Length: 155
Image (cartoon, rainbow, N blue to C red; front, side, top):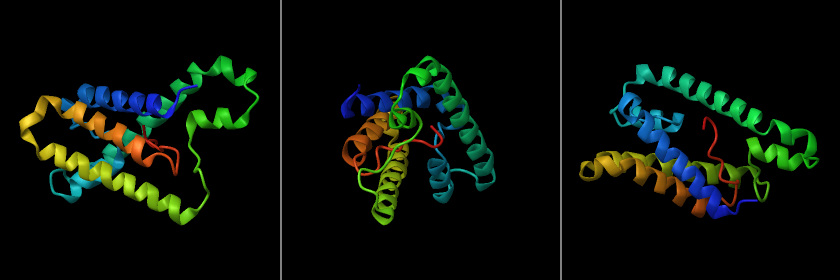
């Protein structure tokens, strides 16, 4: 199994590639919280937010189906239900609704503020996708413990 650093690096690289792949076409809105934050700061039209969120959710569903297909041979031979569930979701280390919700709010706030600050830094335009990926790694390593680094939904 992969340890925490491998998981965080994998997600960081995946987000980096996603930002490079679609950044020129969509502004690299891979997450509804990012689209909403950009609309709140006035750099993105509120009228476009619902359509972007629908596309982000559909992308998440397609991604989940692809993961399900990729692991198809493993479903029958894996007896541990938690291992199967872990492919598609996370669980808090300690179940406390308020603390878990607060952890997700803090992580999402750092994500959205970080992306807003990276976006205004025009000095490093070509490197911004890498910087966003490093932000994802940093969030995973520093804030992923309480709720299991819940980078989904939609990605």
